[in-house]
Amino acid sequence: MQQGGGSEAEVTWEDQQNINKFGRLNNRFHELDDEVKIAKETNENLEDASNELILTDEEVVRFQIGEVFAHVPKEEVETRIEQMKEASSKNLEKLEEEKDSVLAQMSELKKILYGKFGDSINLEED
Image 1: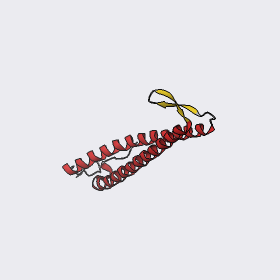
Image 2: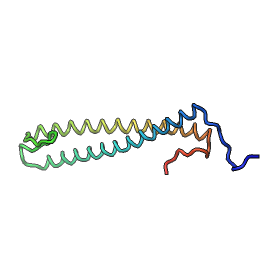
Image 3: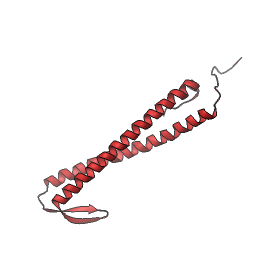
């Protein structure tokens, strides 16, 4: 007679590989989540800079290049900011696509692992 009410499923090498893969994907998901937040913040900052540039009357503005501010013509700064916004938006799209891909893989692994282990395994975050 079995006690404890739960059935213990044997963990095979393949199951362990799936559990490990889920853990790696979960870590990558959190890294991507942080990177997406940073990319969104960068996009907002570039948009703010672009708006401030529209409001200025000066023909030459200070533009930060690395750790140095240089006096650069307003038109060139507008062009650079637009290029930076495009690059940042593309990066954000790429990060969100990778995040969606990781979530899909995690969902598949959850189905497999919960199918075999049921309540014996917890893949949810608290």
